[in-house]
Image 1 (cartoon, helix red, strand yellow):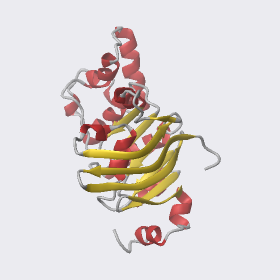
Image 2: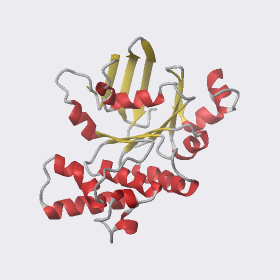
Image 3: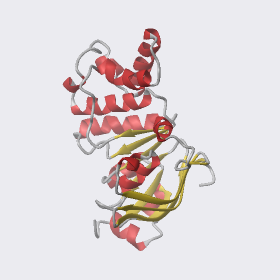
Length: 254
């Protein structure tokens, strides 16, 4: 990975939920302004790993973490680090669209308002630019006061992406963002992911290996809490170094 700057680095990352260890000695480097996909069977630690990147696991009482996660060289679990500041920099889009029961406009304006933006013209600009970046503006610009829940599933997911973009993160985490969507909506999200990588670092979890091969530049294969292999996507899919990786990609298990 000599051609890319690191945005995240994990070193000997271990995580437990109570007595159960979910991540085992995960060491990896996530390149900046690239699309990284995490693949592997259900329960292998993919979602747990990305939830470490914005400290979502802090919200689980039984969770215990050892090891290091650096964001732009700074330890995100350092004593002086505010988890809320990390979540400003590292946005999250979940598996199932989760718009707030508010208007389309208020969904996108929510984050900026929380961070103190009150000027109406500024909010309008942020909402418009965020919806444009999420490839949704042309579909909703004439009905911004409609309930967000009136949108289709694919539109709701793009709205959630716009809501994430409104607070200007550096990194966007996506936890299986297309799993609840039909093929047409999935194609729109995949196109959007590629556009977002021009400005943001995108880390996506997916069960869909074809999707990982289509959209990502780097891929990590996880199995039973371990990172088995991490490399450029073409290398992972065409010339995997580990037998476990090859067996998973060729459908021999998983």
